[in-house]
Length: 159
Image (cartoon, rainbow, N blue to C red):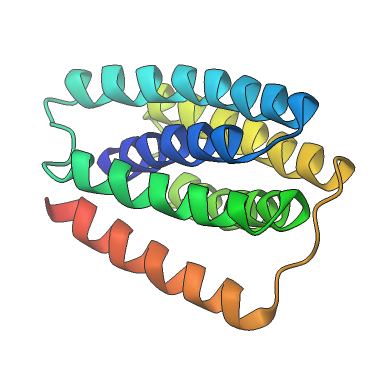
């Protein structure tokens, strides 16, 4: 659950930075709405961590700063690229959440409900970004994003 919490910290940063970088008021509103939904996810994962007797990642400030920087960079590359970044991010998050669902104990209904709802919401964010004009990112960008996510999830699991 700590890794999922880190993901939500990063989502806050990404969407906030992308809203800041866009000059399109309608797109800014979309990013802010997605950030608000991610705030729910952040609260759910924080509460579940506490219920499980665990703690958030010690590196959350670093994760936030890095994700904010990536969000600004994506936003500065233009709205279609920024939206493409959302699509790819959410696809990767959705795959991670599916794997997490498969690994969760069947009787951990609370965690399963949280992860399932988050997975559904992330798919909605990707669909919304596609509808708003996202471009498909090139394969090297996707691979770099997967590598960065692997580093983050592996590190966050322990720290």
